[in-house]
Length: 95
Image (cartoon, rainbow, N blue to C red; front, side, top):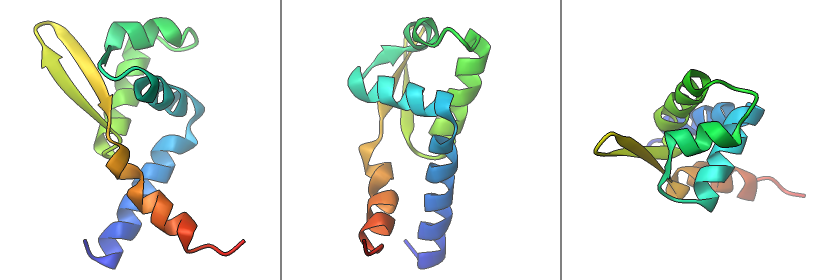
């Protein structure tokens, strides 16, 4: 991955996680791999099911979440590797 692409990916991941609802959804998916869209929607009362679906689309586009269809259900899995660009960036910052 080129430096420019790494930077772009970092921006996408940070942007996706900057929004509190998306961060909550990502944390829920980390805690419960394979969680369904309905289960996520029931955990986030402040957002409609359609809002959850839109937030999931942003998480997928940034590479943080992978969604798999199982019949009529959509199961969501966190892509921990997508956090690599954030780890690298944070590792380069001196305290």
